[in-house]
Length: 341
Image (cartoon, rainbow, N blue to C red; front, side, top):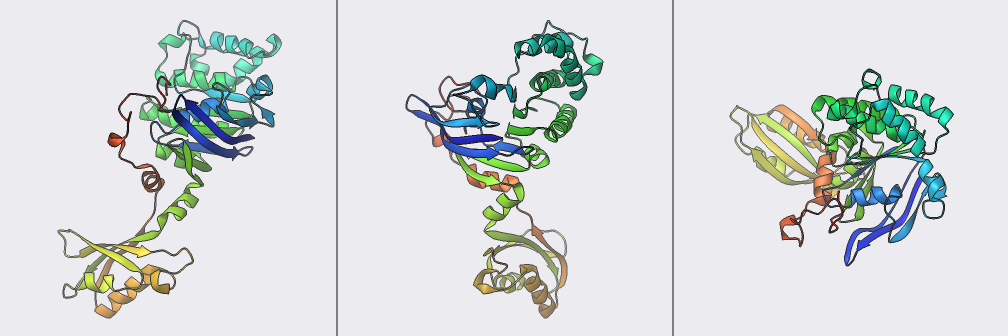
């Protein structure tokens, strides 16, 4: 449904997006994740046709955004990070106005507005002046405007930024419902949002895609080592040495604990083929269990710590921003001078 081929965007000598390629299949919800200044918003603007790429091309539903811009844009509903609404207009009035701007036949506008109001759960405020609405409701109005013309593709840039927890939950539920009926591309830096909503994730850093896949695939690919939590009672104080000698264990850290049990974190090499380091087979927890039995310890805890999307994100994008030129210049997401986020 969306095909991005080698997208690039430069500003003078600065490259905001550098050779980005990806696709989004029909009915899929894909999240674009990255730190501030990574190039997320610049990529979104090129995907939606609001910003021409310096290089590369974008097709939406088979239509090229450069060669067939009107036809391609009709397939897209876009919710920008900073929504421009008319605060003096009433909700239905504004949506009808947007429908006419979209080129919808006048006879179809009324039914489309009613459907969008219902989909975005705006019925109770549909006659209200937009300027009197809460930020959460204004965000719903913007979503209603984005889906008004029945686009096949919905592109959302930071849809929950600045909302309170209750508003965030409501908007996420609405997005999840919309995603079941449309192809959806979601740009955000909120990790739980990606895990809750997205089928697949693209991680962008410094204008390039550094990883992509489902959250589970990214966790498996980045793990490298498995981390175990172990707590034991008994023994003569040599538990750390016994654990460190187990096949595949590359590091043992004893965790301070006021209780009777001694607690440890184990780093275990994961070869990705069902074996631990040194060719030891199967689950490393089995080796820990056998060691506890042989040593006569009471095994109080034995658990593997799951690799989260946050772990993956931090590993792929952490850098010393203070040392980078322009790190504090206040530029937007693209990092380009004068390019707002």
